[in-house]
Structures are given as structure tokens and as C-alpha cells.
Amino acid sequence: MDQRIDPRTHDGRILIGYARVSTDDQDLSNQRDDLIAAGCSRIFAEKITGARRDRPELERMLDHLRPGDVVTVTRLDRLARSTRDLLEIAELLQAKSAGLRSLAEPWADTTTPAGRMVLTVFAGIAEFERSLIVERTRRGRVAAKMRGVRFGPQPSLSGAQIEHARHLIDAEGRTVNEVAALLNVHRTTLYRALVKDQGKQRRIDVR
Image (tube, rainbow, N blue to C red):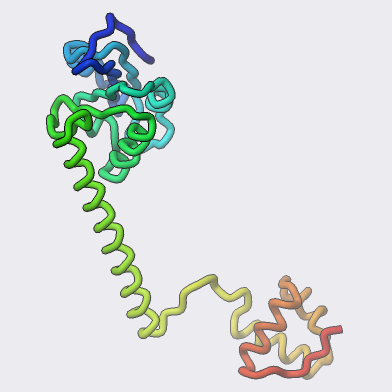
């Protein structure tokens, strides 16, 4: 739900408040009071856990924003679930030519050069963290491959099934189509498994 009050401005900008609590038994009154005292002309508020992605009032607020508006929150954790989430929301606000301001964290004020610089540094740190994760993942895969760990989808047929299929084809004269149907796989899957298991191409009746 959103709440409208007499509009006031912050440095000539319209302040739009956003308040959130994560459980039904928590009260939004303190956040509303602080946002009203800060001069917010409209307040969007919701009771919903920050772990959920569907936050309808946040979406409504973002749709409502106009260039020059400043989204104001009592604390950043009322707006974002993580640093990455905060940066994504800040990018959305920037795309709308809107600002961001936190009452509890004065440094988080993108209407000031210092605040914009801080978020730029945060964005750089987040990108650095992502690059570290990618590098650790790459090294982990390399080390796992050296230990014999195989990546990718699990084979459709086990070694025993492939051996049984080869017996049916070679010893009993069954066709690949027949054996594939018995094993409930496509004939191409069976053919590739047989070839890979043998290590070289064989002539197989694929009638």
C-alpha cells in the first residue's frame, strides 16, 4: 500500500519513500514516521520477506518514478536483499534519472557526488567479487578434471546396459532400433554409446 502526504522536496527533488517489513507481526509505523519527517511526498510500503523476488509495492514505486525523484528509505536493507540487488536497483533508478537516499546511511545518497562515487566503488567491488568466483570455479573444475571427475549430463546408459545391448546386437542379431526400444532410448543415443564404448567405429546394422 502507498501513502500520500503533502509534497515536500529535498534540494528541489520530490522524495518518494519505500518501507518494508519482513513479517506480518512487524509494524511499518516507525518507517513511515521517519520517511514523512524526511519530507517524502508519497510512501510505498509492504509486508513481505526480502528473500522473495515478487515485491509488488517496490515494482509499483519503480513504475511511478519520474526523472528527478529521489527514492528514500530508512535503511538500505529495507530496499535491497544484497549488495548486488542494491546495485541493480540503483541502475534502474539511474536509468529513470531518479536518485537514491538512505536516512541511516548518509553516504548512500546518489543526489550527491560523494554518494554516486561510493556506489560506483561498490559496483567495482561487486564486479571484482564476481570475477573471483568465476576464477575459483574455473580452477575447481580444472582440479576436479585432474582427479577424474566428469562434468556434463549423466550418460543415458550404464556400462552394464551398453554391454547388454552389444550382446543383443552381436550375439542375438537384434537391430539397433529393437535394442534401443528395449532400453527406452533413441537409437542415435544407443549407437553413440556403443561407438564410444568400443573406442572406434564399428559397422552396426541400423535397420
